[in-house]
Each structure stands twice: as C-alpha cells, then as structure tokens.
Length: 89
Image (cartoon, rainbow, N blue to C red; front, side, top):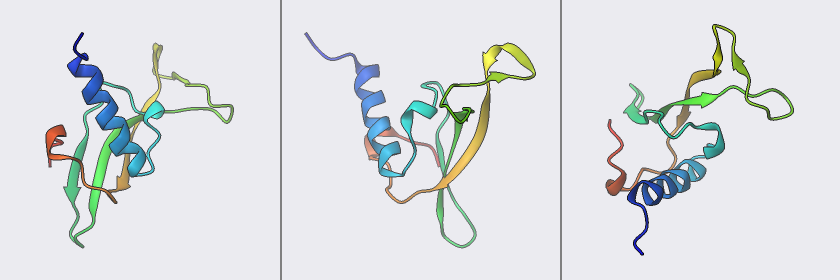
C-alpha cells in the first residue's frame, strides 16, 4: 500500500522544522509556512505556533474559548527547505 502523500509531506515538513530548531508539535498542520529574506540578507521562517503553558499544555484562545491559542512566530532559517516542499518566499 502506498504512503499517504499528506503524511509524507508532513514528515518532510517536520524534519525541516526540527533542522531549524522548531518543535513541529507546536506548529499546527494547517499553518502557512513562509520564508523571507530580511534587509541584512538573513532568511527568516514565518509560521504560527500553539501557545503552551509551562507544563506544555496548549492554552485556549482568550478571544475564542473554542479554539487553541496560536501566535505568529519567526525564526532564522538555518537550513533551507527542500525544493519538493515548495515553501513560498
């Protein structure tokens, strides 16, 4: 049986996130990933991450009690994404 393409992509995304010191458990599957180049030439990854408490629990959004709390995050891109992931710039 062939592997589910979405699962294969998620595994590739998770590997790339880990290579950039981002814990993939904090990044919702549906988050939009984007890489930009700053004025100084630094490549930066833009993504959305779950907000967690000190115990690691995902917090509830204070503005919507039915949703997990998420915040926009950025981190330096130390490892470029594989071409196959097609992460937009």
